Amino acid sequence: MADRMVEVEFVTESACGECRAKGLCGVDDGNRRFVTVGDPMAKYYTVGEEVMIGVSEVMGIKAAVYAYIVPFFILLGALMLTTHIGLPELTAGLSSLAAMSLYYIVLWLLRHRIEKEIVFKIRKI
Image 1 (cartoon, rainbow, N blue to C red):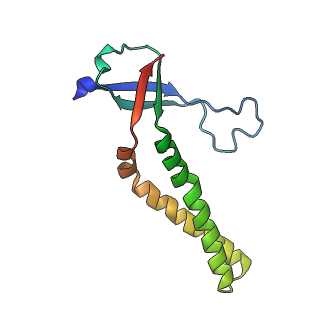
Image 2: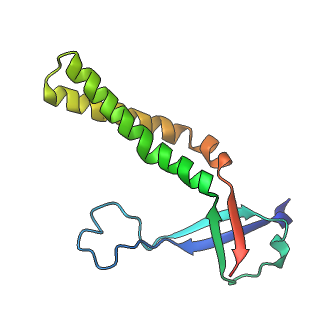
């Protein structure tokens, strides 16, 4: 099975350019990452060779839903619910943030299950 796996090293880069706030917004820029990609043609790749890795469009959409869409609706729903039951605005806002934080904690706890769903593709440039 190991002969069907390729370990790819890449450097994350953002499109922020010379933005003055890029260090504050949380963009992970310039870090070396590794990903292991399964490919039946793995033995034909050599160390140092440039390759392109990616995920399917469906996986990209799924990641966006997990990271942005679901938390947005949790935040909005919790805010609407807490204000509807009459909590003060500050308490409602903090409760909504707590609900969204709880979602991200659950997402982090399920990260290994989610990682198994993500399938990377590799090809030579």
